Every structure is written in structure tokens, then in C-alpha cells.
Length: 254
Ligand code: PEP
Image 1 (tube, protein in one colour):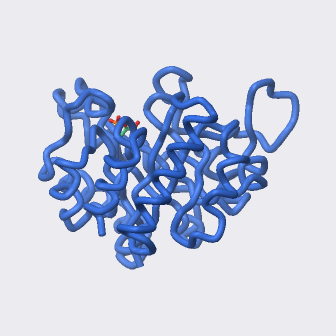
Image 2 (cartoon, protein in one colour; image 1 turned 90 degrees about the vertical axis):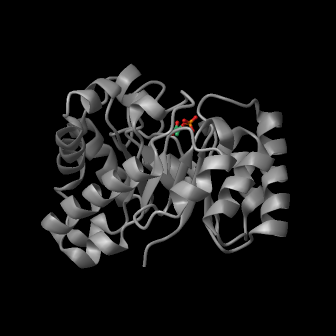
Image 3 (tube, helix red, strand yellow; image 1 turned 180 degrees about the horizontal axis):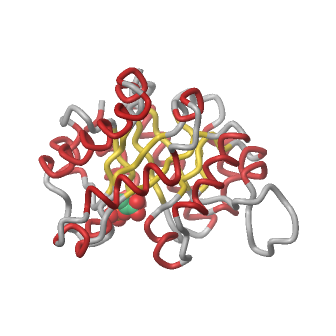
């Protein structure tokens, strides 16, 4: 069955004390208003994870994610964080292939395929991001780009592993810009992604994989997006930095 998931990607925001405060506020609102109806995944900066995890411990549908992981298991890779380290501090998810990683850190589909493997080997669910730039959309290359991002990083996986992957469709032109894909544009791409998966792996897997939408989701546009039949939740950036707005987005999913 498709999981309904709303994930908050804090990116490089919040000092440690601010992070604790935000998680406490989210827990309080979540407990009162949405408890156990939608999976909520929090992706704070790495150094906050260890101390934030106990705050959500025992809350069955509240989980932690890393924002990235190394494609190597361990060793002399200064500044990197491994998948096993994330797992050891309680992460059940890891975001892989966010467009900011692709753009600023030159992460390619082949490179990301290794991160997917290592995340799965450490029993974490990758939240694998795909999305086209505005230029790619305008020159009609968007389907080709999304298909390549999916096939080159995911389609080496056997079916039983792909079942554990969550996909996030995030049009690059909508991230942090205030521009959102219309619900029709988002639904069209989500249906396309599901079809590509169905063609390769069959309908059963395609119907059961969660596909999140990301790109300037806010409390006032979340409901319309989440009502689309192929949208199973959201990956939220800016609006995840404030508890009231974030929990309102979670409520739009329930
Ligand atoms: C993101 O970074 O994944 C994202 C969707 O950001 P924002 O919600 O700020 O557009």
C-alpha cells in the first residue's frame, strides 16, 4: 500500500537550539491534530540528528531522515557522512539526489545509484528526487530527463528493493522560488513516473510506490496538490521551517 508521507527538508537552516524548539513545536501540534494518520519525516542537518531522535522516539509515524549520504561505506572521505552512521542515530530515510546536490555538487545519476544501493543496504528508505529545469521543460525535454533520472539511478534494483524507495518529483524551477507546478502539471508528471515504473516492473509495484511532490508547497496550495490521485505526499523545504505551517501541510494530506 502507498504510504502517505510529508517530509520536511530543513537544508542548511536552524542552529541546534532552534532545531530542538522546532521539533518540540511540531510534536505538540502533530500530537493534537494529526497523530498517526500521515507519516511525517524530518530531515534536519546531520549534526542535529542524534539529539533530536530521542524527542520523537516512540511516536510511530514520526521519523528522521538524513539530507544526503556518502556513496562509500566508510573510509578516508573527509567531511562525508555514511549511510551506516545515519542508521546508527535512528534515521529510517535519506534524501538522495536533491536538485541542490545535483546542481552545486555535480551529483550524477550514476553516482546517485551508488547512494541508493548503500542506503538500502543499511535498511533506510531513500527519498530519491527527480525534476527538470525550466529550460528542459520549455524545450520539451522534461519527460526524457525524468526517465533518465529514474532509469539510471533506480532501474538496476530488483523489484523487492525498489519497493522501499520513495520518489519525490521536484521541478527545479519550483524549488524555493514561490512558483509551484499546477496540480494538473504535477499530476501529469506523477502519472508519467508511475507509468515508467509500471512498464519496467509491472502495475503492482507502480501502484504501491509513494511519489511525493516538492516545490514551493505551502499550507494554501497543499490540499489541491495532495488531492491528485498520483500524489502521495510532499517534500517540503521553506515551509518546513515553521511548525504551524508545516503541520498545516501535513493536515492537508490526511
Ligand atoms: C525542497 O528543497 O525539496 C523544496 C521543495 O523546497 P521548497 O519547498 O522551499 O520549494
